[in-house]
Image (cartoon, rainbow, N blue to C red):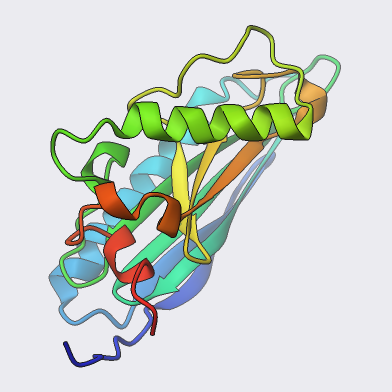
Length: 205
């Protein structure tokens, strides 16, 4: 199959401010059709608003909220990014939430973890064993003995890897921060859905 170059999307930053709050929001353009851009931007805004609402009230005199993002992949027809929201609402320290989105840049479709793999493949078991091995090798002290990821575990795609991650306090103490577990696409190649976003990452070009 001949290699076909796909233009990355253009990503600009929109700054939204209100009292005690500053949010830096990604806005995409440069897609093949305007409907795709609208779909992607609408989903991004939905997640930004969802994270802000999950943080709760900013009534504390010292409270503040900051939102930002990181682009993880913008190539081969795939856009994968993480959206963060930090808020201090009183207490010992602030709280940061993270949510990631992975899109097909031709259609605007966003993917759940299960959709990255062939139907019927036991991706949960495969990924869980790889995560468990990293927990052991990295000496991470988890709250409970690690058994399995969730079927809808948080993830993004970066550098030919599927990165599985856990929210603050989800797996281990706050001091660990977000726990990231990069898994090479080549360790998952036999169960990858080739029509999904991991498919292009497993092609050597």
